[in-house]
Length: 90
Image (cartoon, rainbow, N blue to C red; front, top):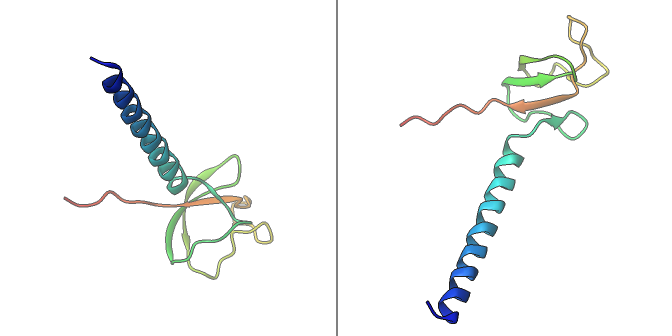
């Protein structure tokens, strides 16, 4: 293997690493807990919610407020949420 081939292989490796790092960042962004102070769900449906100690699944109907102003009947106050992403069918 000559020097040109080695340099090309290194550039290809570096490009592949950068592509994988970008994909990891994209996937982490899709699957993160979203603070209610940042935004609320856009669509009606179930989502995962958390108050810092308890996490579970709740129904969002665009009227019930997650925010700290309104506490869920069990006494917790939702601070973060994330969409439920179902696997795609084959």
